[in-house]
Length: 173
Image 1: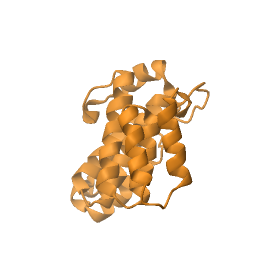
Image 2: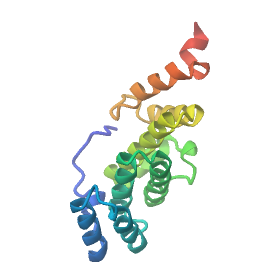
Image 3: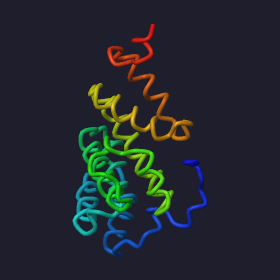
């Protein structure tokens, strides 16, 4: 299965969003850098807490504000929402290739979104020096994306370089 297959007709940002939530996100984008951006995004979140556009907007805001713990919490919410839509297990570490195949029949774009959210959570854990969580998440992405279409293996190599105790390649040597 090609995780870069872009034949998907609609993606998460194409899904209808409550008009007020959309206006709040647009206002937050226009006022980025001002102190009232977060309250605008949180208002949008109250209106549509499970809409992926809202979650992505919050994630990006927290990430670019260097509020990595907050961004990580939103990444976990995005995993929960997208995973539920795909019928994935509640816990990402229980995900198998069979789940990915079944999810692809529902929406390849949503499968890709889920795996990118998992990669993002792994990256954030890496930045937060939560080595074990970072490695576990990135290993899962590389297991499910065995041709590395999503590029998680480079992040995994970085994680291993700073936390070598978990590198299976070193154990073989």
